[in-house]
Image (cartoon, rainbow, N blue to C red):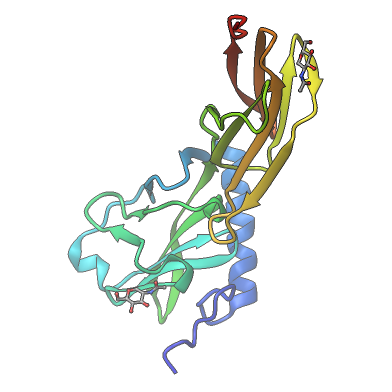
Amino acid sequence: MGHTLKRGTPPPKRPSLMLFQLLVLAGLFYFCSGIMQVTKTVKEIAVLSCDYNISTEELTKVRIYWQKDNEVVLAVMSGKVKVWPEYENRTFTDFTSNLCIVILALRLSDKGTYTCVIQKPEQGTYKLEHLTSVKLLVRADFPAPSISDLGNPSPDIRRIICSTSGGFPEPHLSWLENGEELNATYTTLAQDPETELYTISSELDFNVTRNHSFMCLVKYGDLTVSQTFNWQKCPTSI
Ligand SMILES: *[C@@H]1O[C@H](CO)[C@@H](O)[C@H](O)[C@H]1NC(C)=O
Ligand SMILES: *[C@@H]1O[C@H](CO)[C@@H](O)[C@H](O)[C@H]1NC(C)=O
């Protein structure tokens, strides 16, 4: 039974009281000094500082917790580091640099407020020594869509496809010509269950006997990305 510390349960002896104190302090901290904010993109590395330097000797005595919202991410007790499963193999702490926490391969779900708590032994109990919160925002931006040619499904008709992937939240795709929305032939939307990131693609058929300038517009959240496709009508044959 190595897992006496459950996620969501703060490790100290009197969890609810301790947690309440932490929340109150975290609240005060927020209102007094404003909270540090770090913005990163999915798959990048986040380095969040605890803003506290520690000697090797001190390290074996103190308890260090990094919590996200109210769940433990990483704990250091008696100099030993324990990382909670969701962060395993991609999270570590740097004792030489402000006790910062380093999270690799960021996921969307990593966004939240991280709090570093340092407790020092004092008269047989652990007293709060230091508290820092850092807010982490994780973005997932769609790259500008790409448009490719799928050839002629029938004479005079050409089919093109517009697609983009790796963004969040859920996107909406539309085709426009001279500001008017067109009917797409076929649109697909998929979400990766692990990363939560979306992929969208849409096919459009058009008559090759006229000139065209199409815009493929992808909206997500309050952002948009787009691509244009121009077609010069075929020179009249025969
Ligand atoms: C972390 O890595 C170890 C060793 O490679 C592996 O056994 C374990 O399953 C990994 N844990 C997670 C959560 O991926
Ligand atoms: C393409 O446009 C031309 C000229 O407007 C029309 O005669 C032709 O029927 C159209 N073809 C299709 C398949 O819609």
